[in-house]
Length: 447
Image (cartoon, rainbow, N blue to C red):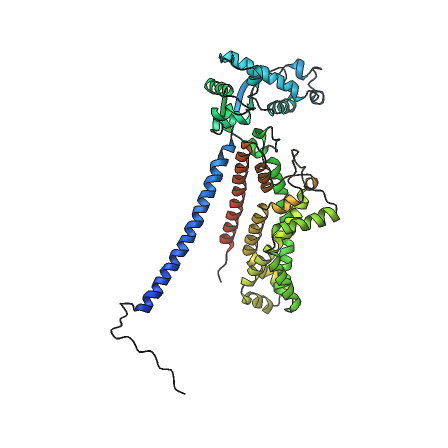
């Protein structure tokens, strides 16, 4: 059998001058590179548009319009018994505090010489948020010695006035709005010039609970942040030890047979199951069968644990597999048992990859909303959950669900709140991903 004849080189072929086949190959490579760059460019453009939209709509949520006025806390109204007993003072409702605030605002305008002839008293006091009396009541009950004094109080302005100072509300829109009038906007301008109204950092956006549709200026993320933190604790405590133990068994101890293959295939498939399917499972198992309370961080943590476990198992097995077999052989060679070789040598060397996979799994769980909607975590919750462990069973919200809830409300101020909540959520996700990168680089080993 003779060897196939080799193609004869073209006459005049040169290593410097490419032939037609080489030129086609180079052109194909350039087209592929151009397509890759185009794909990266489209991705970056979409990211820029997304961030521009979110930051443009949401950064203003971290600033709030305040009305700063001196308020005289009349003891005859707030403490009729005169004993400064918080329990008896708590019987005074926000109506009593609201009257003090309204009188203080009218007096402050008169003292500054700001005319209010074109407005009724209801329109003047309508600049104050309905949440302002509750804030004043909370401050007085926390320090009863304030009763009888005149304090400088920062009251929330209504969402329409807040939107006017942020450019969201105009005189044209105010003329068609039943909740604000152009005359009130003129009064807001004069109050700003007199130093009675201004904008400042809105710490309450991060610490306050949610508010009703009538008080969007008072809505905050406090309960949602705490609820998400509780759920992440549950996910971390359950998913990390279970995931690592399952990975060690499958990778290091389990026999290689069809049952092990079946388990591995199912774990890989579970990692790709849509999250809402886990929500249906949690609704049926944890709430309908086990009777756990709805809207509880424990139930949310359990469903997110089921969703995160496959990701952690896959990442942990990859980290264990990356440890060279010579480490195991050396440990066994000096007399260590199988378990000693795993827990004293293999597992510590695989820990950076395990931590990275765990943090990325937690980051994904933090942004999930679909399974939480199914277990009732979209409920309106104003009370903060108690400290652990009792707080795990108290009603709470979660950051992604809070975003969903605010986008369903009609007031445009909630759109600003929702974008601000997205910024907070993105900040948490970026922090967790940065931590994963730092841990990986800090403990990374090269073999």
